Length: 179
Image (cartoon, rainbow, N blue to C red; front, side):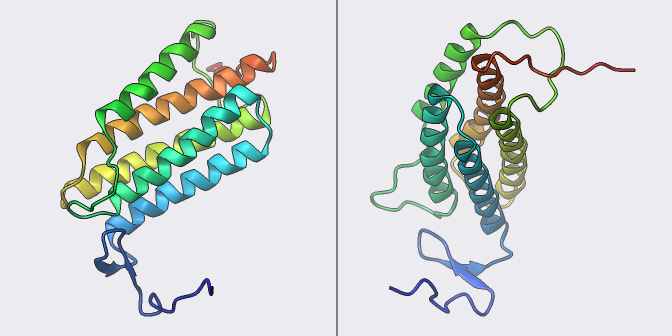
């Protein structure tokens, strides 16, 4: 099977639901940011985080594919599992579990520490951008509101996951020291 289709040579692409749109469409830009986030999560996995962290990262990569499919679908599509309140609750449960294992925050955390934790912090910032892209998109196009909630929780989970990675490595989170 060839990887190229030539269907995008004139600046258009297909949404998951089949509609053709410009590659500059805000919906495609949002899906592209989600794809970028997923690739950076893959890099975080390649940096060999602790196994508990790796397991979560892989689950998040799969959830991001589902999220991107949701964003790339206009209307209903048979067989597509939309992001749901249950997906959000699962992230919240994971955050509660991680928070219970971490020392209390007493300062602002700087991205860094172990290489995997630093990369997870990069993922957090990309997630925030994806959330901003989604908010801008929702001003002009109908979207599943659970996607925005999920991205908001996901960025918080990534923050905690970076801290947890450092904790498991016995590293202190770098903290901000204002001059």
